[in-house]
Image (cartoon, rainbow over all chains, first blue to last red):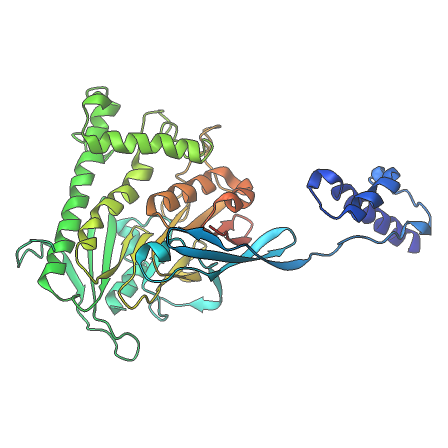
Length: 155
Length: 276
């Protein structure tokens, strides 16, 4: 049992090291160096129980969340600064922390909010929603659509 | 600014004349809906002048513009210019400037989606069919009728694709995104002050988006919703995302200045918001 755990751990370690190879533009040189020393880890697929010594410090094994704030970009309408949240290498949120206000053009260049999932189902017409976006309604389908309910409610 | 005279409300069915719930919204609100291009077009306006005749006239003009677009572009009307081009009776060079404009937009869309929005391979017979683009192009064009009324915010919904402009109070429009697996419920909501929301998918008419490279019907992405500054491009990107299939999850991260969500066939919901 213990051997299996170690084997899996070493496989994961090898994979992590493999993916942190410099081709992924990883800027932390320590990671790259680590990958260099345990280059033999490329035999990850086989369940080689390579002893207990393979507990090398796994760099960023679990998903990391971080926020980044961009430099203020000057536009015709004023400065724009955007803060993004990155989880596991993917942008999961973006907020404009500084942006010009006032005219329509200013609002257009703001980042758009990420759609917020509903915890519970919202029944037709019950929410403060003015418009429904969905795959092309036909006139027939419209009878049952949420948009119809909202139009009728005059929300 | 519009010089339109009073009383031309057209055949638009007035759905709501409620002056707005004071507790919720201080600005008057009015809505219309008409069936054009085989789909419902909803127009909601907010502003002090929402009940003025000039607004009703502008909305009637908007609907007239859309009927003119339908007559010119419909693939179902044999006399439309698009049908005549398809049959080889009309050379594009001799077509109406609007038809040539849309044809150029189709080329741009092909490039901007790496070939995944392809108006020349969207149907089995391989004829040029700009229908995937003309709807939102026409709405964006017709909406300029309302831009001429100062101080008027509006939301135009055209078969699930929405164009939004703010009222003077800058209050965002709340947009519900339909759950493609249960169309009586809203999957997500997104506030939009100024911009567009477009959804493409397989929910309403069955699968009707094809992989332009293989010609196969696509089904990996059940629906794609794109929020962005432009209605036309939100629509094009949403359609391209459905056509791409599962790889759209990575592709949408390249769409700067947009947000949105993808519903995949296995039930996964992928959301994104990219900086400008």
